Image 1: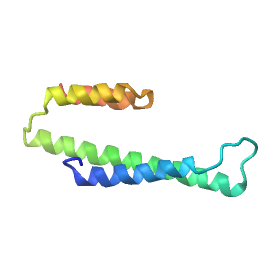
Image 2: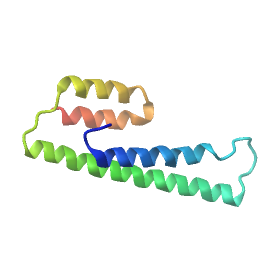
Image 3: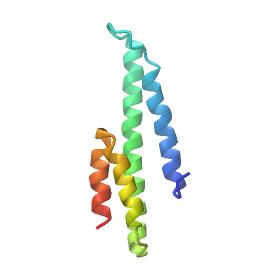
Image 4: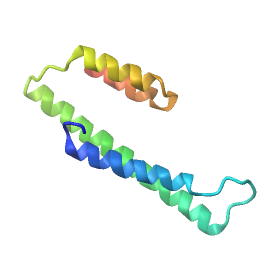
Length: 101
Protein backbone atom coordinates (compact mmCIF):
# COMPACT_ATOMS: atom_id res chain seq x y z
CA UNK A 1 0.00 0.00 0.00
CA UNK A 2 1.21 3.47 -0.84
CA UNK A 3 1.47 6.20 1.76
CA UNK A 4 -1.12 8.21 -0.18
CA UNK A 5 -4.49 6.40 -0.01
CA UNK A 6 -6.14 8.43 -2.79
CA UNK A 7 -3.45 7.21 -5.22
CA UNK A 8 -4.13 3.64 -4.11
CA UNK A 9 -7.84 4.07 -4.90
CA UNK A 10 -7.09 5.53 -8.32
CA UNK A 11 -4.60 2.74 -9.08
CA UNK A 12 -7.18 0.13 -8.07
CA UNK A 13 -9.81 1.73 -10.31
CA UNK A 14 -7.27 1.88 -13.14
CA UNK A 15 -6.52 -1.82 -12.69
CA UNK A 16 -10.18 -2.74 -13.11
CA UNK A 17 -10.68 -0.29 -15.99
CA UNK A 18 -7.74 -1.88 -17.82
CA UNK A 19 -9.13 -5.34 -17.10
CA UNK A 20 -12.28 -4.32 -18.96
CA UNK A 21 -10.21 -4.04 -22.13
CA UNK A 22 -8.98 -7.61 -21.71
CA UNK A 23 -12.45 -9.13 -21.55
CA UNK A 24 -13.26 -7.98 -25.07
CA UNK A 25 -12.69 -10.76 -27.54
CA UNK A 26 -9.55 -10.68 -29.61
CA UNK A 27 -10.43 -13.32 -32.17
CA UNK A 28 -10.25 -10.81 -35.00
CA UNK A 29 -12.91 -9.51 -37.29
CA UNK A 30 -15.15 -6.52 -36.91
CA UNK A 31 -16.22 -5.51 -33.42
CA UNK A 32 -19.87 -5.39 -32.60
CA UNK A 33 -21.43 -2.08 -31.62
CA UNK A 34 -21.54 -3.18 -27.98
CA UNK A 35 -17.84 -4.16 -28.08
CA UNK A 36 -16.99 -0.78 -29.59
CA UNK A 37 -18.91 0.94 -26.80
CA UNK A 38 -17.13 -1.15 -24.15
CA UNK A 39 -13.75 -0.21 -25.60
CA UNK A 40 -14.68 3.47 -25.76
CA UNK A 41 -15.88 3.38 -22.16
CA UNK A 42 -12.75 1.59 -20.94
CA UNK A 43 -10.46 4.02 -22.77
CA UNK A 44 -12.35 7.03 -21.41
CA UNK A 45 -12.20 5.59 -17.89
CA UNK A 46 -8.45 5.04 -18.21
CA UNK A 47 -8.04 8.60 -19.49
CA UNK A 48 -9.96 9.84 -16.44
CA UNK A 49 -7.83 7.67 -14.14
CA UNK A 50 -4.65 9.08 -15.67
CA UNK A 51 -5.79 12.68 -15.22
CA UNK A 52 -6.73 11.99 -11.60
CA UNK A 53 -3.42 10.25 -10.90
CA UNK A 54 -1.43 13.16 -12.34
CA UNK A 55 -3.51 15.70 -10.41
CA UNK A 56 -3.17 13.91 -7.07
CA UNK A 57 0.53 13.11 -7.51
CA UNK A 58 1.23 16.74 -8.44
CA UNK A 59 -0.62 17.96 -5.36
CA UNK A 60 1.32 15.51 -3.19
CA UNK A 61 4.62 16.66 -4.70
CA UNK A 62 3.72 20.32 -4.11
CA UNK A 63 2.70 19.55 -0.54
CA UNK A 64 5.97 17.76 0.18
CA UNK A 65 7.98 20.60 -1.35
CA UNK A 66 6.05 23.29 0.55
CA UNK A 67 6.83 21.47 3.79
CA UNK A 68 10.48 20.97 2.74
CA UNK A 69 10.16 17.19 2.97
CA UNK A 70 13.19 15.71 1.21
CA UNK A 71 12.66 12.99 -1.37
CA UNK A 72 14.78 9.86 -0.91
CA UNK A 73 17.19 9.80 -3.88
CA UNK A 74 17.65 6.02 -3.68
CA UNK A 75 13.89 5.41 -3.79
CA UNK A 76 13.47 7.95 -6.59
CA UNK A 77 16.11 6.10 -8.61
CA UNK A 78 14.46 2.75 -7.92
CA UNK A 79 11.08 4.07 -9.07
CA UNK A 80 12.63 5.59 -12.22
CA UNK A 81 14.27 2.24 -13.03
CA UNK A 82 10.91 0.47 -12.63
CA UNK A 83 9.21 3.01 -14.89
CA UNK A 84 11.92 2.75 -17.55
CA UNK A 85 11.17 -0.98 -17.95
CA UNK A 86 7.82 -0.11 -19.53
CA UNK A 87 8.08 2.13 -22.61
CA UNK A 88 4.61 3.60 -22.10
CA UNK A 89 5.72 4.86 -18.67
CA UNK A 90 8.87 6.62 -19.91
CA UNK A 91 7.24 10.08 -19.63
CA UNK A 92 6.57 9.32 -15.96
CA UNK A 93 10.25 8.47 -15.47
CA UNK A 94 11.23 11.83 -16.98
CA UNK A 95 8.83 13.64 -14.63
CA UNK A 96 10.14 11.67 -11.66
CA UNK A 97 13.69 12.58 -12.61
CA UNK A 98 12.80 16.28 -12.75
CA UNK A 99 11.20 16.04 -9.28
CA UNK A 100 14.39 14.80 -7.66
CA UNK A 101 16.37 17.86 -8.73
